[in-house]
Length: 244
Image 1 (cartoon, rainbow, N blue to C red):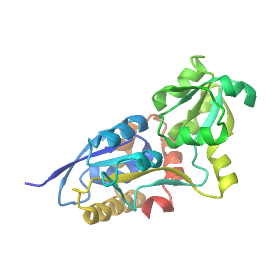
Image 2: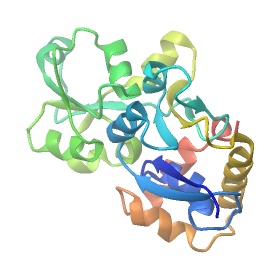
Image 3: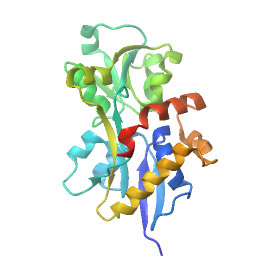
Image 4: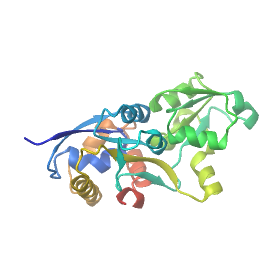
C-alpha cells in the first residue's frame, strides 16, 4: 500500500494551478496525496503544529518553526516583484490617521503583516481576520483599512476601496529585493526528490494547457469566480521563482 501524505495549500489560483495536475491524478508519484485548502493564517497554524506533511506557508512562519520540523522545497514559492500586498481603505488616510486606524491583516506571522510593519511600524490597532473578509469588512466600516492579498489586488476597486500603498513596491524600492511571500515546506518523512520532480511536472502540464479539468478545479476553490481575475492572479504569482 502506498504511503499517504497530507498537502495543505491555499485555495488561491496560483496554488491550485501549481498543484492541479497532482491533485487531479495527472502526475504519478510513489505515494498518495490528500489535499486540504485553507487561508494563510490557518496554513501557518498548521505548519506551527506540524499537522500536515506538506504545507504552503509564509516565509516568516517558516523562520519561526523548530529546526528540522520542515524543509523548504526549491519549487512552489510565491516570490517576485510587483506581487506584494496592498494597503486599502474606503478613502485616503494620512499616515497620522493610519497610526491609530483599525487595520485588518490576514494573519500575524504573514508577509502581509511584516510588510505593513516595514511601512508603518507605528500602527497600533491591528485586527486579524480571514483574508477573504478583509475587503467586505473595510467596505462596511467594520475596520478602517486592510492589507489585502491574493486575488483581492485585482478587485478592491469594485468594493469602492482605494489603494493607500503598494506594500510590496515599498519593500522593493527600499531593499532592491523580490517580495518574499511564501513557500512549500515538507516534513522530513516525505521523499523530497520524487515530490520536487512531480511538482515541476505538474507546473509544466498546467503551463502547457493540456489538462481540461484544471480550469474547473481552480474555479472550485478560488475566491474570485471571474476567469479573467483568476488568470491575472496566475500570471502574476506563478513566475520564474515558482519553478526554481
